[in-house]
Length: 100
Image 1 (cartoon, rainbow, N blue to C red):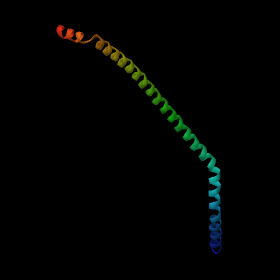
Image 2 (cartoon, rainbow, N blue to C red):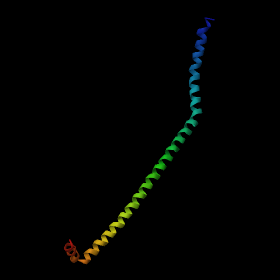
Image 3 (cartoon, helix red, strand yellow):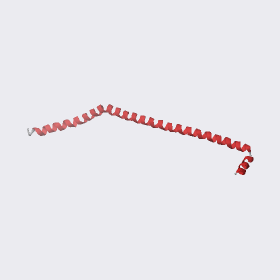
Image 4 (cartoon, rainbow, N blue to C red):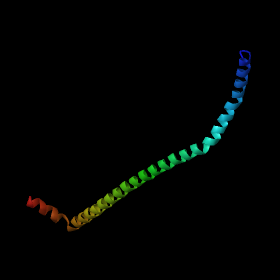
């Protein structure tokens, strides 16, 4: 038995030199579809988050545009009022000064 131990150990180590790479390649090819599906799942989760962020940004931009259109209407009214006051002429400005 003691003489057989080095021979058995050599056979065992030699077979491991072949079996470990074979097991690695097998695991790689067996795990590849699982890993790819997990990666796709994470990407789709990121895409959903990106879509939600874009929706929020679009909503904020729409609110900004609505507020700007209100400001545009107010500026238009101010311009009309200034034009009206110019048409009235200098009499209205002196009239205001006399009232004060």
